[in-house]
Length: 218
Image (cartoon, rainbow, N blue to C red; front, top):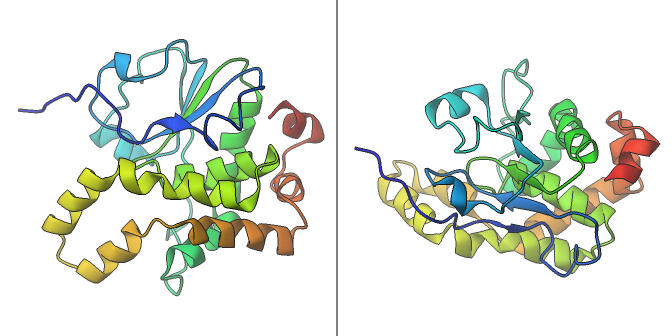
């Protein structure tokens, strides 16, 4: 028998509440669990689900039947791997995603840009795929690197119970420890990579195909 929780443990505004205080809408980030609709902020105009099709089939999003729901897989379904096998640490995997899954990242941000109203971005844990989209957004909005890193690392507390269960069930503790690592330096390293290679987050978004008006709409 499945149980439904009443709360999402990793739900929060992207970049922290202060970053978006003066904006016309709020973009939230979250994990995906079996929760009731009342676990979500009211009045969401879009729910951007970054999970793969097999994930959304195995655990349909609680808001999947609403008009707001959008399935926008970040991982390119045509790619045979999620990241280069040589990319072991999360920093390496995330920077690989910036190229390998650029169309999915662009689609997620384009969906947010096209939405007039509050938005929820989510994946399974709300840390990795959601973390990339959230970091790009926060930096685009002007967050400093410390704030971007702190927003990423905040998932460690939200996922503590989930991580404990994963460690208890893991047959590869080393791989699990790598996947669960959640410290500010991971995402600050990724954003620094973006700015070294492309010059800025906005320049990366243009390279991914977003038009200037879409970037402005973010």
